[in-house]
Length: 464
Image (cartoon, rainbow, N blue to C red; front, side):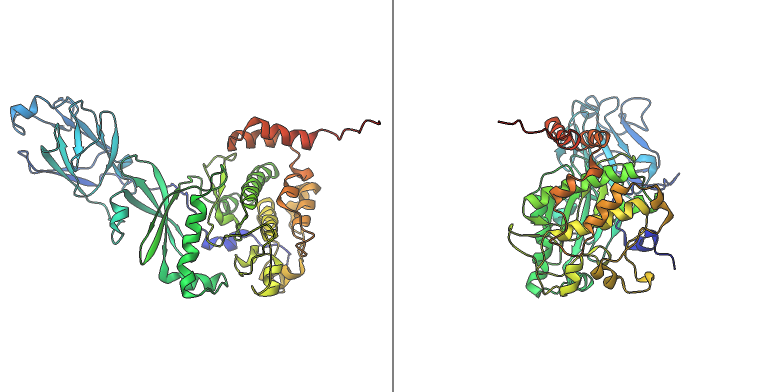
């Protein structure tokens, strides 16, 4: 059998956080307005935008037939609008306040030219919070059913973005700001199963701490290539982490869709990943579960910012400390982890090995180690046996393959540090550095210093 395996065969467990495709449904009645202190029964909502006010062009033209004169004269021509993009039930309903006299939801003023998200059973008041005029009914499926009040009072819960061994990820919207986020929900009773999958067997008291560890780490981090946590809700049965929403999906899905990534794009992505890992390592943090599934892309553009996510297997370590927990995804895990069965000691060099596997995968769309290669993948990893056998490698530069070989050295002491990787000849690419600077919004001086280190020949010392 050929010594390569398409990564598509490994993509079934991909989280695909940021896929934004949705199917609009035409002519569906997605909501209903019921009259409260107004002379009307109900109105079905089945268009992209619904306007209410005194103007003749409104879907609901308010007249003396509906409201008393003392209230009507304060109503604007277009007092408020309701919008649901393409009538798509995967999107929330936005209420826009177009009136100086105010539109209120559950007694809270929206503010002129502002918007917020409308939820089922919300009460809309016109001109004054006590003038309760409508009750909104959302006729679409309730994705928030069973979620704690701490979430439903602040967020609109939308469609599922993906799932993994230990949790589910949903798209959510902040009700007041309308900002989008990805909410990772981890059920605590699944942690023991997750631990078995990652070959990590903590005590029951540590299982919850493992998830909270991810949250505490992420809340303390601030880097353009590291996912940022917006909020966390800890409940007895689950932990809910509200994270940046990356619309471009994950790196695994990008590779599978394109079959492989070109060398310039692989280099741009890899450079950003290395900067994220350097940031973590400089703070004494090892990620320990680096893989394409855990790298998220900001947009669908080929040249895009990426962010490293999922710190559930991370741990703070001192510079001279070691990590003794066996964890990580088998096909990306370092040999020293497998060799000791989790009982030995290993360092942050495990992330360098994983970066090597990720780069191999980006450039070829294949995996360097696989059970389909005749011997168990774990044995291949322990011995560091892999080959560049796929025809695509004929198009890849020798500098790239040399870097991969250096990162996939079995002996961690001989493996480069993240600083060494960033100084590699393959990354001596002025055009790539400029693009990365723009994407990462890094200070110009920092990039210029790297360019100086990479591109200028060494100066001879003057004799004294």
